[in-house]
Length: 227
Image 1: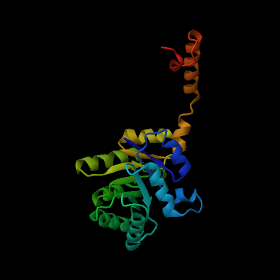
Image 2: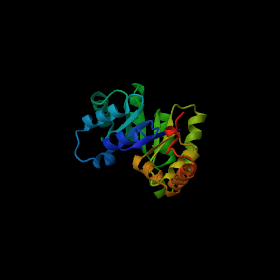
Image 3: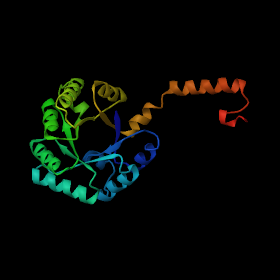
Image 4: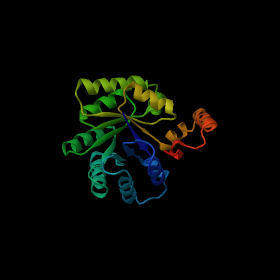
């Protein structure tokens, strides 16, 4: 089980990387738009410096044709680092690019997966990660949990070196369901994780524990006790 941060906000990555056991960062043009006009390569290198080389960094291409996708990928690998996973929308040109980049040993994430056949083709093309979009799929009347299970079976039956990177969530219940359905990995805005941990009932339990402690102990915490 892995969790990635779905953001390009440097402050959020710095803050929440100290809290949550995350394994990488994903981005796309829509996420980058939220950061305003940035110096793209410098911004991506800063994200890498925050998360380190041991975590994965996924950066999406913009071009739609094969040559353009490969050119985008080359620019990313040269100007950020060679360990970046190149995110490629799963179109016909995208499948061509995935196969060519994998032949060169490049890490690839097949993204914008809205159907089972896209996922199956991306797995067969050699993608390291496939990113089915939960809300987009359900808007198209595609059963997301069923698709995740089908992808997981396809990966295991074919002994494919591929992970399901579930994406596009509105709430934490959707995230949990994706993992329960068989997703290896999810990518989640860190603010969604933060809001989930702000449950009043949890704080009430903590307050009750403290009150019970202080009712019989003079020290505020265990660490304050003198040995």
